[in-house]
Structures are given as structure tokens and as C-alpha cells.
Length: 465
Image (cartoon, rainbow, N blue to C red):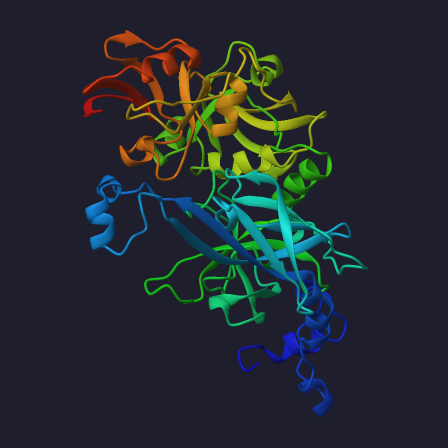
């Protein structure tokens, strides 16, 4: 408690945000003894520990098919052994039916998830939605009975730098832990944990195992999901990041609607940072906003009148300083309405209405898991469409057959293929659709000549089969 200012202690009695009160010196011994205990008591029952298990079958060594080697090495035969990987994280109960929000990276490859409540009860949990782009996932407890404590989700747009916050989770597996601090910054980008770079930064101690835990305000509401730290040693140094509650709401709403993926608005335009040079050329007083570099011929941006060279400054009155912040603001808008973009065009401010609709499926996805003995075996591929490109966070003008997933331990993973790789050519034959690619991938060959497009760069390689 030594780190807290006396003014902060006085606020705890009413459990209200710091920015709503005037600073004051404690007037009595009773005021000095005020604590976070009322908030902690109210919110900790809704914070859980998440244990994820991933079982991977290893390939058996062919030597063990020989009776001599089997006897020499103590039996075991040629059967593969299971390799078990475990991860520990935290989660937050957000609905009475046992719905829990955690980080995607906590349960990414889990084959089994178990959840421990603060009252020591434990339950298995189903993964009902995974959203890698936001690094969020939604679980549901199996067989939980009785009233479950939940956290209300706050309006994270009202959070201010300097607000008191508490971080709750299970760091290093030592058990549920509460740390205090303030909001150090807002709209932090370059964190690299998700596609939507607009994090709440806090100095409340966050350590490994806190991922998926709650960041709450002094009214006991969820303002964010703790997700990452900056550290040279792996421990806390006072720089932690949380996914804002606005993004959590979007993911939870999709899960409650019965969807297994998050549907977000599609802009239909490409954006880039406004550099100092660009700002000067446009007679802007400072570099800010998101510069429109391309607009799809048919899409919400084109329909609303957005054009190349426009600089988007705000979304529904919320200022955006760069494309990352625009992406977050736009992605957290509810589908079905219209967003008003404040745009700087040739020195004048223009309002551009953009319909909040999902990206279209212009071609069937035809998602296919590649089989056979090729270097691509274990990769899941699909036809690219605006909807697929949007879900992967790819450029809107991408086309072809794209890798949407790579199975851990597969040939594709071992050879270095990645999500978003566009497969162009195999052994001299152009790839046109997933079915053709799967047929080509099942041929028997000693050498494979493969050409891909990765992040706009064409790469050709020869691999052994």
C-alpha cells in the first residue's frame, strides 16, 4: 500500500473512479486504514484459473519395429508415445451460464481445458469460440451448478490515464493474486500480441500465468483482459498490457449468439501511417490519422465515398492516431449500423458514412486439410475471398489459395509454412483451388518445387519429400 497516494486511499470507501474526485489529505487514522479489500472481495470469485492440456502423438522410431531393438531398449514396440504439453492461465466469468473469457494463447492448441474456481471447485470446460486476431477465447463450464459470480464489463472508452486498477490472476501458478496500480497509457500499439493494437497499459504487476485474468476498476467492473508484459527476465517490471473491454464485448456477443467465430465490420480499404513527410505535404500540423492508400471497387468504403489520399482522423467522434487504432475502433463497432468517419480531404474536413457490414464470401471457402507425404501435409487451405482475407488480417486485394492453419508437428509446420501463405505453384503447376492443391500434394515425389506469396514477397524453394 506504500505505493498508493493518500488521495487514492480515500477513494476506496466509495469504490468510484479516481478522476471523479478531488485530491485530499487523509483527515483521520480511519481514512489511512482504508484498503482495496471491498473491491477484491466482490470481484475475485469471478476470476478463475485455466489449465490447458495439449496431447500430441509422436511418430514412432521405425527401428522399434525390429524385435532386436525392441528387446534391447526395453520393449515398447513401435507404438507412438504421447507428448503432453500444459499451459496455465487465468480467466473471467462473464455470464451466469458459466461463460468464461480468457486469452487465445492460453488455450490455442488445447485438447482438454480444466477450470478451477476461487472456491476450489474444478470443472472441465468446452472451447466455444477462439479468436486469434484479438487473442481472446470463450469457454463454457461443463456441469457447473448454483449461482456463479460474474463480472460486469465496463465501458473501456471512459478509462483514463491515472485511473486506479487491480490485476487479478494466477501468476506462476502460486494461486490467485491481486496487484494494484494505475492505467499508465491508452491505445498502446506495437505489442505484437494481436491484430488489433490498442492496449491498455498498466503498472499493476502482471506476470506469466496472469494471461486471461481481469483488470478491474474501482467499481469492480472489467476494463480489460490482461494479456502481455514487457520484460527482459520474464518477470514484471511495471509494463503490462490488457485488451480493452470493448473488444471483449464483441467476442462475448459473438459467442452468446452461437457463432464459432467473430464477425466484424469490413472497411474495404487499405491504410497506412501518416509520416512527418506526408503530414507536411498535406499541410497537416502534425502526423496523425490513417492514410487511405487503396479502396476496393465494391465495398463499404467505396460506397460511402472514401477515396485514395483521404486521411481518416476519427470514427464516430473517437480520434484515431494511426491505422492500428482505426482498426480497433472500427472492429469494435456493432454490425448493422453506420460509422461516421471524419476525413481530411484536400485540406477540408469531410464526413464519410460507412456501412457496418461483414466482408462477403465471393467464392466458397472449400477449406481442406492437405494430406499425403508432401511438405504441405497438415496445412489447412482455403479459397481467398474478402471474408477470408478479413478474418486473417490480410490485404484486401489478395487472391488465390491461402493457408488458414498449420497443425503442430506436421510436415507443413516442420518445413516452415505459415498462416497467410498463398500457395501459387507446385512442381510447375499453377494452384487454382484447394481441391487441385490437395491432389498435387498427394503425388509421390522425392523433390518438391513450391512457390508461395508471403507478405507480398514471392518465394520459390525446393524441398525433399
